[in-house]
Length: 503
Image 1 (cartoon, rainbow, N blue to C red):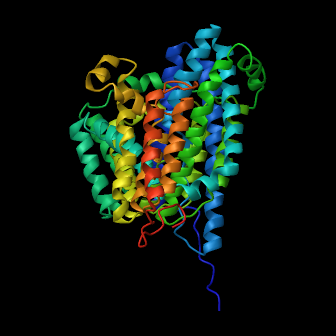
Image 2: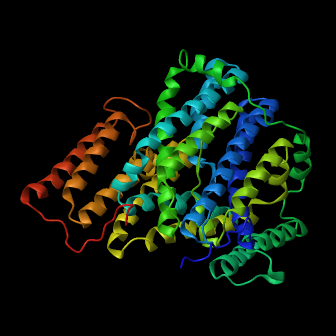
Image 3: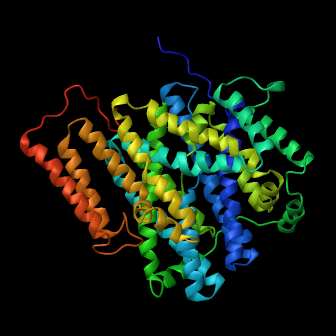
């Protein structure tokens, strides 16, 4: 006799915690986009009337789709504890499009509107490329060791999420430490909050109130936020059409930025889906990459210029016990907030130090998942895969303003930070393969690393032939060393458990 179908709720208490975590991640990106583009000289009518509405359309579509996908998985497996995938703008990809596409286009054309149209076309192409990449996404996932993929995710979590957000937490210690305590008690230890409020909501209410009562919050920014209130309809446009003409003529060089960052975006989606698989919810990588590409393409049709992806914070939502409601709410709120110009208003209302501890928890959960979902023998592979992101963090934070500082520490920082996602995965994959005595796999991964270094996807600032010769030679020597063990007849470890994404 079959079990009765379980009830999968539209919304539950735990969705509130996950909503605030995802909402803060996305709103931080939206605010950075607005501030950066206004600072570059893009008019407010393009930023608030085109770019942010376009991004909101993509965020809405993706969040609604993944809420539906979670319900489908819940029905298939008859489980009520399925968590929807988070969806939003990848922070590294956002910075690349800001300063690698928008800024050069603005500089070369001298026209903000033309530069925006070029970026829209670049976003459209990026979405189309990711949809094509999805055709091989499942094969790539099956053939990459899980320690490598999750180690790369954990590297991002440690540096850009948990680490950076801990810095933000301590910018106002009295507020940040209290909110951090609430987060640890409510989200880590799962102890109930006063009045049975969700931990994140309680933390934001208490932290925000205390910030204004003590004068720690900058109230002057609050009044400035009202200047952007208005009505910005979500309407498609043909900016992409004119932008394609410019992109494939005078600005063709921008394709050397678009291609590698799109591959990065596709791999980020794959890693984050794998992390959710390790946490208990198995989604199709191929489907998710196709959906992310379609969402990016849809956003471009509405004037957006930033690719979207399965968000790295998804595992944190799983740890919070969220379902699909947080995803539905996030999509709806972003649509409404963007339409009425509320993004700047909301960002001004809540101090960063109040929400940062919640994101510290998200980073913590992702790092823990990388280790918990792998056998202890693979911990070295996970750890090595995390390390390139230390270089990537330093490079992205200091190379523009203080390159001499990086050179003073080590000339290798910039080279290691360029293409860190590829480097992290391949170094972790080589290590996992060697642990299993799979030297054929290790040799293949080393050869792939040499190939990516040759074309500039790793260890080089741009695409070029023979872009990083020293690294090409180094990886070829690694391949030869691993191949020697193949020639010697070294047998795979009998007791090794599978380390790929299928285990």
